[in-house]
Amino acid sequence: MLLIRTATPTRVGTPQLRAAGQRTKLIRHAEQGIAAFDRTIYYSPTFGQRQRSRMQTHVECTGSDTNGSGPSRIGTVKRETKETKIDLTINIDGTGKCQSKSQIPFLDHMMDQLASHGLFDIHLEAEGDTWIDDHHTNEDIALAMGTALSQALGDRKGIHRFGNFTAPLDEALVQVVLDLSGRPHLSCSLDLPTERIGTYETQLVEHFFQSMANTSGMTLHIRQLDGRNSHHIVEATFKAFARALRVACEEDPRRAGTIASSKGVLTQQ
Image (cartoon, rainbow, N blue to C red; front, side, top):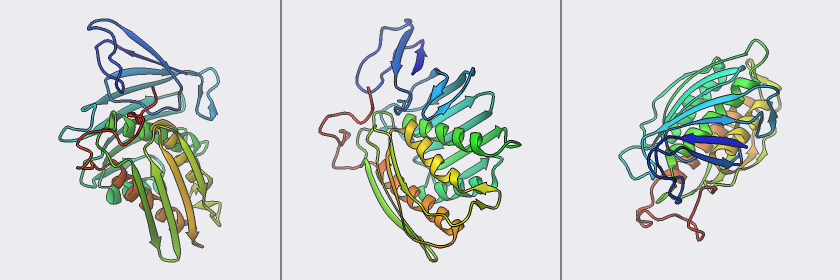
């Protein structure tokens, strides 16, 4: 469970919160996508699938737009625990610029792919306990990325919602299908032949996407159709993900600002 506090009136999806000056408390499931507004969030000791024993996670989020109708849709997350310190901004209406300093060289390379092929602007600075391994830093970057994405999308009015792309890289071929549904789910069928790419553990790839799906409220399917080289397979995955996400985030002119759901909502309430 998580506690969200805000001192100013705002909207989370469609419900109007209390009048100006009042403090508001909302209790939600920790895996849901998070709407865009200035807030401080305190996560409970359990988050997603990981136990954080005797530790409190502090996250500050700011966003420029709550409904995706402004000139740019930007999400910023500052997330700090005893294990990591993350400062991440994503502009989903960007031009493909990336500044990534994650302390994980291969993950920086994948952030470049995500920005370049999604035409997102990404700024990432991360410090973590990489002297242990890359697990905590990899996971917390993904959690922050999902939160920032959900924040930038706001109530998800007018977007296409669905994305589907298949990307080749030499002998590798990977398909990514996603739905910005508000319902976190990952199905991943990557078969990576090596345990590491450089110093990066290949098992962290699936965990990255699981963590990002959890906080973005995304249904995500990743299917490896071919491939024998771990680097090629993972890079094709990030490229396909970026292209599919770009399509899903783009505004549908025929929607005229309405939500692509018969329920009328794409965020968990």
